[in-house]
Image 1 (cartoon, rainbow, N blue to C red):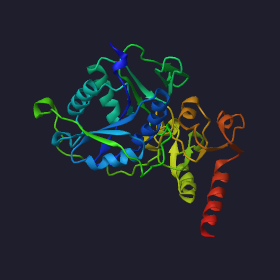
Image 2 (image 1 turned 135 degrees about the vertical axis):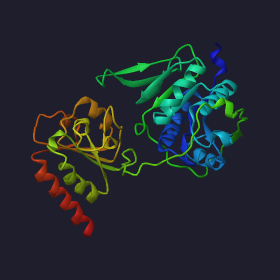
Image 3 (image 1 turned 45 degrees about the horizontal axis):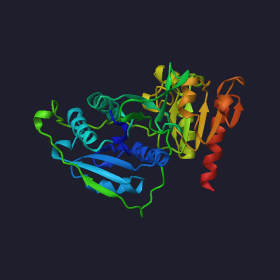
Image 4 (image 1 turned 120 degrees about the vertical axis):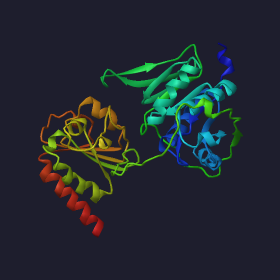
Length: 335
């Protein structure tokens, strides 16, 4: 394989019902950093139906070029259709690096494309760097339950491919003055290429929480003692304009839905303020929140590992401390 034929950093611009997913903005920001170090452009590849209007948004967030694959059979995500179209585009344009969000779609799509183009894939990355000597991408991900971080390279095959955890990369502020190139991709796709058919999309009726977009997260752990404890921290989250998170122990106990889980097996977050209530600080939880701007820990045990990463620590009964904090923030709002 002639590696010199491969150039540029690609980002899979995942969209759902015409809305770009938040992780794409993070990947474009990270892609600009990587491209700057290897001297190439950042390109987005966008699939769907009547989605050309989204190209400008991608350019505002850092894309130099947007490849648009617009086709009726791409209106809804299907594994076969997206795999074929992106595989064909990779074989034609030969990107050096391809990044996907580690979403449900990204985790389904990326390994299939990697197999088609005979390259490697590093899944669930939390850090990406360029080796200063050979300019290959160094892909870092948690391993062995988060007890160590493994750095993986793909030295002999291209493109180098990664899925990246949402919430761990820094997105750029949109620059509406940026100019870029839009390239229409020639899509060769028929119904015979697709083995599944989307009959209906049913959105969940239950209330979900968006942890990755929150500026303030108040999380509860086993130290709450019961599911009723989440009502207490909900009041603090409401007073601060935030959302409620949880440790794996609390989720496994059935006290709160998995969509609230922060950590290695949940969501990686990077809010401005993270308040850990009754969370001891297992390494798997710390891996998902230790990049927060400010970490406040509330725990009865002064030796809890959470205090090692906390900017502020409060040793005491959370059922006394949290209501006082909620009242103080609520009063501040009313002033």
